[in-house]
Length: 474
Image (cartoon, rainbow, N blue to C red; front, side, top):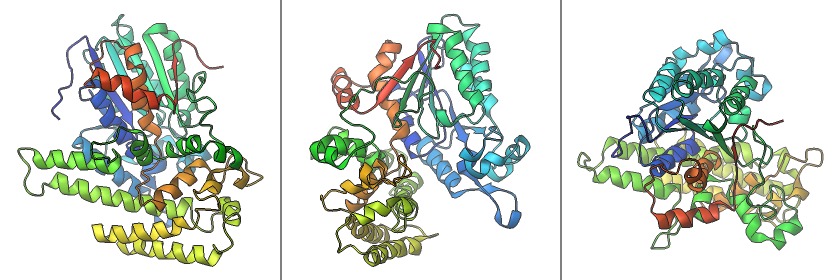
């Protein structure tokens, strides 16, 4: 809040469209630090596939728990200041779950359950007012059928009347983001880049090797950190195997590859939340327990519970068919009964907290029980190798089953760490650190030269970015 957004013509400004999961929040905070200013406008992409759920017994759809979590993020971290951008991706098909069957009229009817009107036109007006020399647009979510409106507005309100203004898109292109947008959304982005040549560029990041809307680049990491590992390769290159795993977790990635604190501590999610909480506590208006501080502390605990619940019930549960070969490879002393008992104990602590404020003591008990369960998967090689190697993939599904993210989940759980979901949109911040100076040399940055020259070194080993000007994909 101490940073003032630029409003005069010229210079650099940035705006944001995101679906507001935890990785989006971290991306937004990081981008504000890189640019040294608030975004001109925040657009909340209200994705029906995540934000709504079917009502019971044929009742109309209602807002989901995930929607309420996203609103909590917006309230706690961004003072509830946003423009709602509602879903207009009608008939999206099975890739969008039940939402893929909804028509335009049904999507429009969700304004009531959300309690939000569509404000995309207001977001556009704010972004296109007094265009700067360079406008940076962060895209951290699927465009929900709004890509044509976005690109048309940028053409009509900025690119044609302001012949020197440049636009740079920064996007996470991986699954459920840009590549999960409608075909018309993706075509509109390609058209805008092609039509305006060097004045419009797009820099993409991804954790999925095939998830690009433009021509995929050569990843910086080369053969060091592939997305599939055999057991033999993992034993020969343990550091590369761990990096490939760690990047799947937002928290583990931050802890493992950020600069250590002077006391040896790590700059993970908990540390970030603590810094925000301390800053809130030390502000002139803060009392002994300000509402925002209490909300943040409670939100962190709720995040940890939701992360544990999702991982225990949907990702590494003991009856997961995709992990059958992982369980077969475990030591003979780890029986199905033993896994089931440990899993049931961990779940019981989570069930007891359902619908209740999460106390530190209850969270500690659930975390310890989840640690005991995860430790059973440590395996014969001692570091959860089987959970991330191709030998344990289901033979008829070579790209499913035990993946690097499942090894990551088990490693985090066994250490009692918050997994925090995928790194995903945070990679946009790493792309900014690497490439902002190339596309906008005058961009304001609060980072010192020493920080800017050292931090990207490890980042460049772990993600690929494509910067494309007027070159659509085949």
